Image 1 (cartoon, helix red, strand yellow):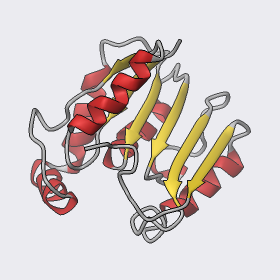
Image 2: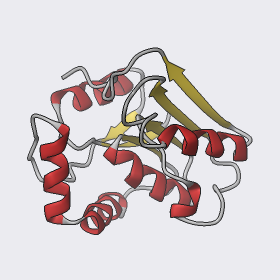
Image 3: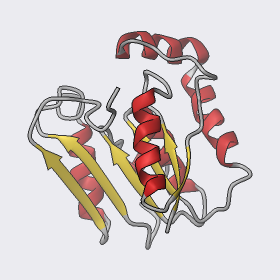
Image 4: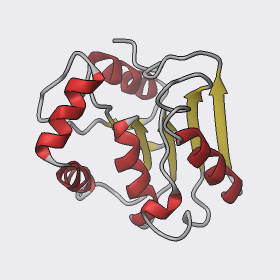
Length: 168
């Protein structure tokens, strides 16, 4: 089974993110859930994003890098929304990545380099009417990514929910 690092979204390490990780664990995977917010959670996305701006986006990225510093290189990086940016950065820049699972978001590959690493599979999951995923251009970045990567897949589900895999 795989070793997975799952980065949370802008509301923090919610019970729903933990439950998702627990489902992966129940299937036999080893799952790490770094808390980039040091125990803080937020009731809504705007409040969580205010916290991110207060702490600084670069600090969030650095926290993600520190969270994996002592882990093996051969892991799957997964992220929910805000956590996708950290997961995608690590999948593209940390040698040895086994794959990437990107939920609700995707940024252009050019954010972290000139190309997606050869041989690293990626899946992007989003809803076809999600105002963030579709309205902010993530779906376009996802389409470009999977077109570039031989083993990339985009899964679009009907609906407009953003955090659909978080049961909180």
